[in-house]
Amino acid sequence: MKQFQALFFDLGGTLIYFDGDWPDVFAKANETLSSYLKDTALDIDVDRFMDDFISRLTDYFEQRENEFIEYTTEYFLQTTLSDWGYPQVPDDLIENALQEMYSVSQSHWHAEDDTHETLSILRDRGYRLAIISNAADDNDVQTLVDNANLRPYFEIILSSAAVGIRKPNPRIFEIVLEQMELPNTRVAMVGDTLGADILGAQNAGIYSIWITRRADNPANQAHADTIKADMKIATLEEITSRIR
Image (cartoon, rainbow, N blue to C red; front, top):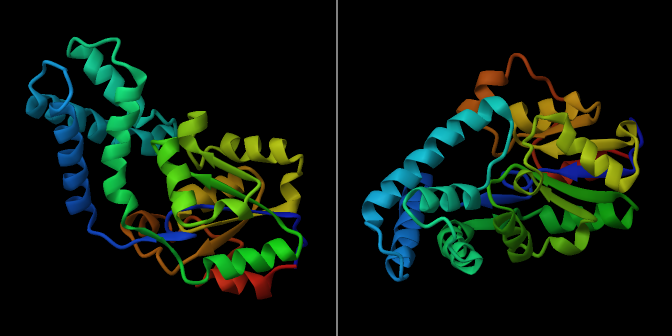
């Protein structure tokens, strides 16, 4: 087995899991954002505004799966408000609005039962650890990390929202390699998504480890015959006995 100096991890579906119903959570999050905007001094038809904002996000979410470029939720909220006649909305209004919106989904994310023990073992063995997460809001990623008490384990926590690049673009992996001053041959990537985590790692020349316990979804099924990980594990704790 190859010897590694560092391990990169995906966040959602790998270190933490979601216990809600996504359509219901999205609906409640949009309602929360709508309520917040109605309480501001903005003179807009909030219901029609939300229809426009959600439509723009939905179109983009489909597009980003092909272009691997990340535009943030903040960008879409700002540009939609600008098009509705508010080009200079205060930054704190945008930030607070998004915090309210994301708080709905954040309450449904929890650390996997074996996450802390596994990370502790890896850290004690001397591995350097990093998170690379695809997400449209960096503050949301950082909040999820803190809510799950994961920050002490990681040297770097990088989201696609922070750099404008999504996995599987190899550049997001290369950024972390450069910051940690490591060659790609001494790193392994652990993630649950074949088309992002595994393909991305392979694009960057990084050893790939596919964790499968939450990987039964249409996106992975579409790639099951074409993207093959270097290693497959069912749980995080398996890593501790399978790498050196």
